Image 1 (cartoon, helix red, strand yellow):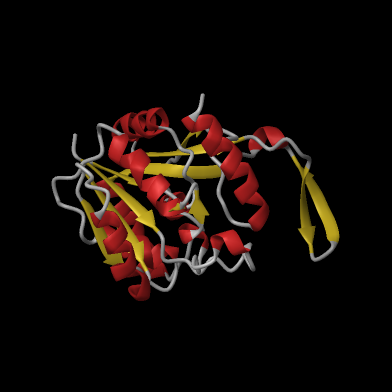
Image 2 (cartoon, helix red, strand yellow; image 1 turned 45 degrees about the horizontal axis):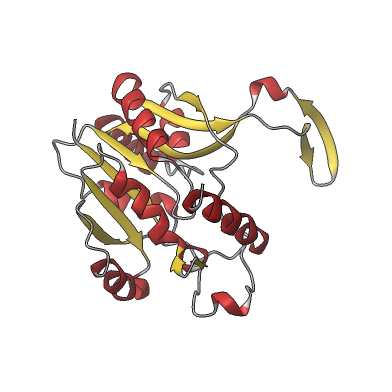
Amino acid sequence: MRVSAIIPAAGLGTRMGKVSDETAGASRKQFLLLNGEPVLLHTVRKFVAAPSTGEILIALLPEDLEVFREQLEQQEYATPVRLVVGGRNRQESVGNCLALVQEDTEVVVVHDAVRPFVTVAQIEQIIDEAGDKGAVIFGVPPVDTVKRVERTLVQSTLFREQIVLAQTPQAFRLALLRTAFKQAEVDHFIGTDEASLVEHLGEDVHVLLGSDRNIKITKPTDLSLASLFHQEQTNP
């Protein structure tokens, strides 16, 4: 089964704000340094290590392409990695990559650039499930009580048993994901993740239990936890 992985990394990372001096030179969260290397490189390595991954496409801002290309050339990955110009938002960035995926691809996996602690086992698991079910995501149940609010006023309390916090990777059959993107374009629908486009299409999206360790690095405090996870990963 031919599998392509897409990593959208063209975001500006505005939630990160000012970071410490030790990450100087990293303008966005995907380029913040973790053990001396950009977070994005750590993420890419997981997909290179996954046996089912046939190619990796990374969407970047135009001004980041050459710098990251130089970093990639130092890695000597066995899996082909292609850099793609990203769009104005995540949906456009993934769409730009999706247009370049080879027609004989069966499954596409989309993963956040700043989730470097996904495991190879998780990648392989979701690829297998997507090949069978069509659309699959990882999700973790919330531990806190979840409220629906309007401005600062609580409207209702939601049942935690009916809620998961969505993670990536998310995996889809190629034909299904392309159809979902085309329909979203027709309807001028902008989703928050790829699964929301498939949901908009009216197709089922299946959920696998995710992991609390599969963190998304979006704010400065996440870096401390990421450093701890990295030490545990490299020195078990």
